[in-house]
Image (cartoon, rainbow, N blue to C red; front, side, top):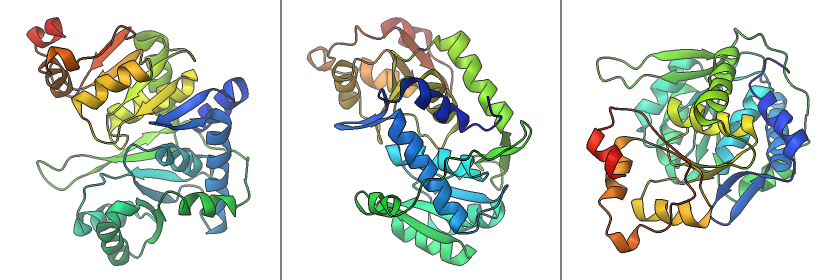
Length: 288
């Protein structure tokens, strides 16, 4: 298998092409479509002059477009710079300038901050809006080549929170992220293509990106997405999508535990609940 993290997509597309990779309510993206979409993103970026090692920002919520763009950047040989969708214009500019990002994919609902930051940083902005973005990809040929990268090459630059100073970009390699996902799937989650993984953790953070997105794609599982956590919506998804793996932080567990009994729904399909981000209180774990 290629050292490129995006090889997770091509590998699962070969084995599970018709199976769902990503879900957002009624929208379902199977592995074949994810593979094709990422190949078109790769071609789009190459046409814009992207070279191996160039940085590209992603400022998207938990929607299927995130994965399509994420793996498209990687298969073109670029480096992904995930960014919080709630950043202000000056913060967007800092992330873009500090990373040297040449292009930024930004969700249309956060266009004002993205535009202001991109203009200041001299970064090209590509707006991601449902319908229009499909037209853009539809007019772009697919490039199914996989950039040849070394395991030690940078794949993602994740920025620290900046609570004790200026945010710092942590460089994560292709080998690092691949091994993280493989170990998660083979030991902690023991995931297979039959699993449905709950995807409410922000994909621009390490937990949601590694244990959620990359692990799901490696296993050929389905990641069902929730852009903004809501306990009632979460338990509705547990039942509707037959979720088997719940990934969350303690506050999510507390919120669902405090729901009225009649709104809790059927969570009997869950086989694994994983918590991170902060310590899980014992009484919350027992109650859940």
